[in-house]
Figure 1 (spheres, rainbow, N blue to C red):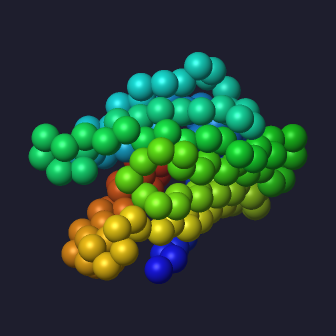
Figure 2 (figure 1 turned 45 degrees about the vertical axis):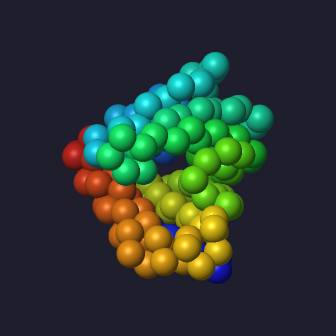
Length: 154
């Protein structure tokens, strides 16, 4: 089964400030909830670019950490009104993970949209895990990122 999580957040600042923050891979550690035990293990460049591979470790359960490798597959950063980048999982906890990060300037600042399309592994077992934990965990992660973003840009 294909799942999708879409979140939007209005950020009351300019495109340059928003882009500079979100297009810096190391800032992902700052906005990820501590309970995930998130740690960047591989990041050779500080700027976002196509082909960039970023490695992490995340904690799925107490004392269970997994490696996660994503590739930046698309970047549009040459517009003042609309920018985006896409990260796709190459190794990790999902069968498929495709995350589009969109940023659109408007009269109130920047509208940020996260669109995550993902598929759980392990067939029926993955479906049960999604229903019991994963869906809520992802929603909580994006809720906490939204709270961080609101505070950071206020």
